[in-house]
Image (cartoon, rainbow over all chains, first blue to last red; front, side, top):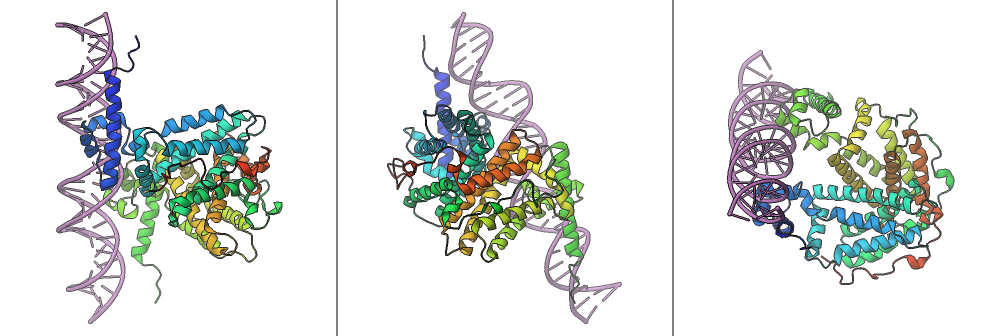
Length: 228
Length: 228
DNA sequence: GAGCTTTTCTTCACTCATTGCAAATTTACA
DNA sequence: TGTAAATTTGCAATGAGTGAAGAAAAGCTC
């Protein structure tokens, strides 16, 4: 007799959702710092104390689907298509990620714009978001290395992920900061990807002769202080 | 009559330094979360309230020289050497940055190892560090664009900085996480830089044919929801 | 050195996030 | 319907961070 989730579960889900919506709406209206957990709880009709059995902190409400998103990505890497290039796979992952962000059927996805604005403008949230992104990239690199263990070692995988993600992230942000209209984002993303894939040399900055690259442990860290 | 900084200034400097040292030592001994601001203040012999007129938050003590470091970097970009390539300049900046981190004459620099360990292991600090890094990169990209306004536009500059920094950051962290000895870091950094400079294609992952790159606004964002 | 001005430090009182605990409620189930 | 398990709640504390007002210290002027 699979009755599906019982009342208990359904209620919990409903409360969770109510909290997320209430929180984001309040944050939008009065600002993140200005909204207290007590207010959020009241808006969802539960006690302040109970809020913390749904979310470990006020920040966490904003990143309610963080882990799920990451897991999906990692899963995607593990089941890469046969013959797919690392870069191709990564681009496909990026696409899925964007799609999930904006095109969800889930009612909660309507909150994406609000959430994005919050994460970009509230320092603590921005920091938290960057940490999430960083962890994701690290896990992504590991997964990539596992998926292509023959062709690419961990450090290379990390460098590849870091370069691609870094280029896109920074270019996008720069473009947004500068006040470019959102429509222009795609063009920006495309260019950033191209630069990362083709290499920095491609930017008409003139080829960086190998001599420029630091070799072994050079002028830096003369005292070996990097150790503990 | 330039008497140099008066007693007032000197005392303030001394207190600030005492706070930084006390804080980092306490964090090291008992852990970041476990150390209260009251304890730090007591160790530096000032009232708890006064702590907050030296640092806006407990986190801030750990990043006491954050802005100074960033400013130095930006300044370096503004006064680039004639004929220097963007990549060359960036590498030189990276070097200076490392040098500043480890080879300072300043007594406080001895705290670098402790600080590094803290930032890597305490979630809130890691997040804060990533935010600082992100802001730095953004400013770096702007400065780069200003310095090479003829050759490179803002988005390109951002992509270049993001790719290079991203590759190094992630590769280094992956290497550290995996448990590699610190001595191996330089080799890792070198490889990451190389990958970023030569492009992801260089990783023996097979060339990514241009077709892979998303062009214009493609399958993504069908509803144009990226807007507001 | 006395007296006055400007800074800095302290104390006090408060708001808010977050946590441990025990009692009160609610849901699941026999 | 009654009991066990899961949730929720109220209450008390701890600790970060802030505003306001007065005390203490430092800088200056005569």
